[in-house]
Image 1 (tube, rainbow, N blue to C red):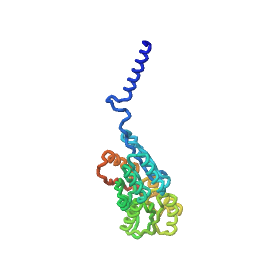
Image 2: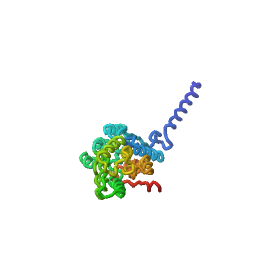
Image 3: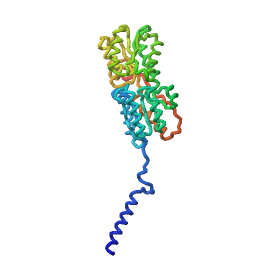
Length: 322
């Protein structure tokens, strides 16, 4: 019996050590550490430089604030793939993320699934393309918009273009996706600027945000309306498509092009005189603004849900040379 005592003491000693290791110094379970909120960023096509820049900005911000939140980045391959974006929202609901920051591919079609996200307890922040107010009201969903005044930004660029034209001149407009609020607002801003300057809009068609489609449409516009002096594109991808069409028609010297977004390729085109101007809505910071507002609502779920207007600036050859 005496030979068993040392072994028994050893077992008791090991049990005591294990018990101490499983608790923190204050007696709380170490597995109950504070969990960081997870925020999902859902964008449109990452093939568009504007949204890849947005993603990079969000990732950089998270890297600078690693203790505040975790970031999940998602995007669709085609800006018109609405069903895939709906699926991404559903996947993030199932993954129990704390917040969704979304640049919706369609202002109306995404509202029902985002309402379901809110019902599931997920905080939703709308960026870039504003959700339709009437559909939101019909769905009983209150979702704050964090982003620029697209109409004011487009009017600013359009007014700058008008200063280079004469009253009575004609132009054409390349619209974005017509069911997107930002596309509608940019078209309205362009139209208002042209109306105020007494410049005729000879034609307007949707290039659906895509460079190749815009190139085809712009080529047709130049052929059907040889009198036009400019093409106003609702985003920079379409502006680049229009530049190629202008070059193909041999009219580089007498047809001006403007865009919207301030992607790096367009900055270079502005420096080279191929594009007159664009609007900078600070894509690298746009998702960050949304994330910051999501974190505020996570911290205080009872805080007032308010829209936040973000900056949009005119970019020209002069501003880039400063």
